[in-house]
Image 1 (cartoon, rainbow, N blue to C red):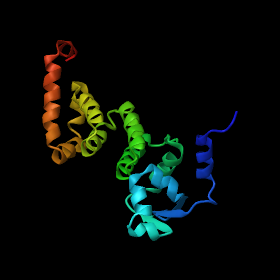
Image 2: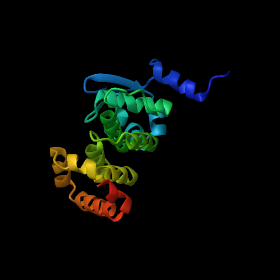
Image 3: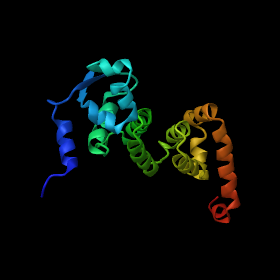
Image 4: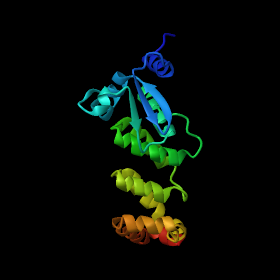
Length: 194
């Protein structure tokens, strides 16, 4: 079977001898190809080929992103997929979603959102809701609100410091949670559960 373009890009990503730009992220160096980055991200395009100072630099310092997250960004740029992120997957995916938004990587943003939609739990609902509110991701926000508004979940979550902080940072969510609770009381099927 002949190799596909995907295989060639994975090979390009793994081989370092043809790279023409380096990134320093918290002391770690990552190499890449300017043209590939520019083709995949409008932000990289502006940084690498526009009038910005970075376009003239061989090594670009990246701030506010952890090396693991930047490596995942590069993995996506070359493979159009998420890397294996089994350890602390939700937290990593949340950070990766913010980075995808920062670099205009809509495909990565969508993959991260899909993964977060599948992994809403007592441990992640509040932080994921805050992120969804910050990035205006309505489907993710609605799904988190639905989870939080479940009376059993709300009873446990509403007494946490994380919940109190969420309400202080995003007071508009308090109204949405109130609306969600009222909506559940109006549903006769939910009353039987309470």
